[in-house]
Image (tube, rainbow, N blue to C red; front, side, top):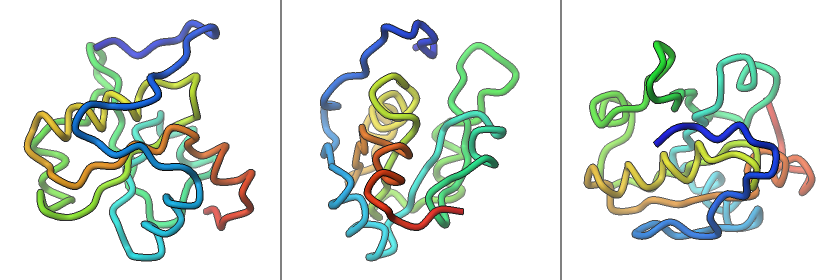
Length: 127
């Protein structure tokens, strides 16, 4: 499950067990107070994020790896809606995060493939 760094990488269009959403649906979920998980590096998160998003970094095989079933469970109840996003189709952190959440037993998992760039392009608020 390594993080892809090749600039030619294209993330999957869907994640088994998760619902893929566009910017408009992600915004609806945000307004409904769904949990948003930003698995990017802390410096990317600090540079700009969806308001209220939690930074739980996904970077397997490194000391930076934070996303585990336990760290997610400490923040997000398994029966609540949770949205994973990162830096659009060139980033695999959100697809892995969503896939792992499904594997770990979360039942309302959303994969926001367009991520932070899609959110900002739509003109939605940022922190």
